[in-house]
Image (cartoon, rainbow, N blue to C red):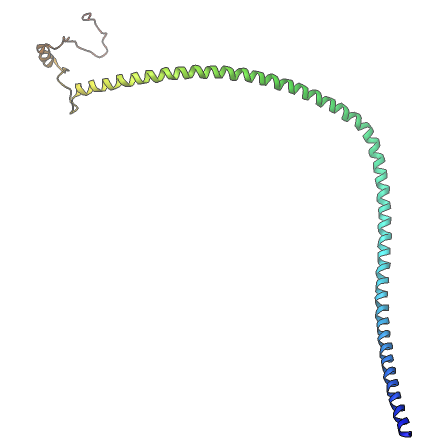
Amino acid sequence: MSEEGYVEERSVSGALLATIVVSLLAALGGLVWCYSLQKNLGAAQAKLVAADQRNADLSQKLEATNARLRATSETLGQSVGMTQKQIELKAQSIMAQQKAAQAKLEEAQAATQKQIGAVSNQVSDVKTDVGGVKTDVAATKTDLESTKAQLTRVMGDAGVMSGLIAKNHDELEILKHKGDRNYYEFTLQKGAQPTLLSTV
């Protein structure tokens, strides 16, 4: 029986020892956790103090800015009181100028419409004239073609004058004997006044 009691004491003391070790480890972990928490808390307090200081500085700056703004707004208010009258006078002047400009613009538009109507009539007249010119050009073209044909007949195909033109007295006599036409002989002198030989 004594051996059984001894075994029970041993096993109880082993469990006790394990409990103590776990408790010590838990206590040590708690101490480490408390230390890190204290360290973080100290850093957070330092940041909080710095933030409070910055807030105090910003508050002072804000109060100074508000004071300056109040002074500026009072000064501006006094100046705007005088300027308001000037603005109203200027606005009335601008409105009068705009009315005058509008009237001038309407007159100019009416004059422009008149001129456009006149130009339209002139364009119609020009169109009619262009139609007449086209007809004249067509007639002139026909006459030119006829003249070219006659010149070709006179000059001949080789570019030599045909027998219808006499260059001297002998050739003129030959043409007279052919009897196709009436020929007149005359002499041209440089610088001399022309003399009338006969009327045709």
